[in-house]
Image 1 (cartoon, rainbow, N blue to C red):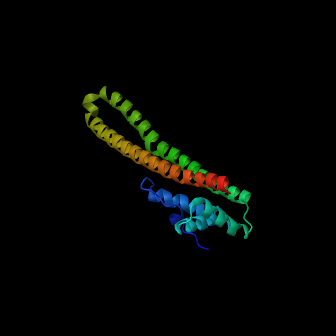
Image 2: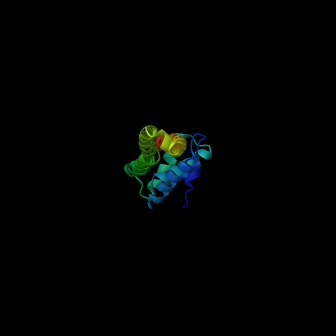
Image 3: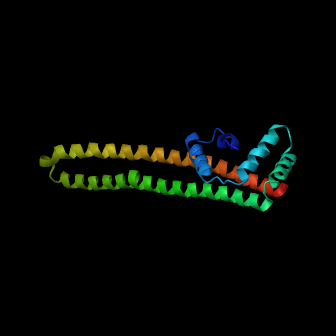
Length: 183
């Protein structure tokens, strides 16, 4: 049974498609072969689309799944499995974000500081070094602009990831709570 994860986790306008696809690919890569949360959710959603109420759809999907060896405990374990996958992606993103900040902001900020100190030194030699000072000032401006652009881009990416992650994680968590309560 092929599962379309993008349809299974219907996105919202707040989700960033690129981030969503990255998270869904992680889920796909960690997908289990046995009847698990994803297959259960697909069955559950299909029954809901047929007009069944949540409780009846969940019980009906669980009854069918139980013939394939799924138990409530196994379902809850697989919900946790996918939450762990999402959490691991969040940790990897946080590390990548930290590296981007170090490479694109901190390093440039340190470079700006170093160049500003050089300007002070060159100011003492104004006549001889005026041309070099102008070039350095232009380079500082370029570095500041690059750092500012990088900061905005990184912060936007972070915010998009967080919004998308929070929505997807909450949906998985609420599904777990719903199934735990119903089943």
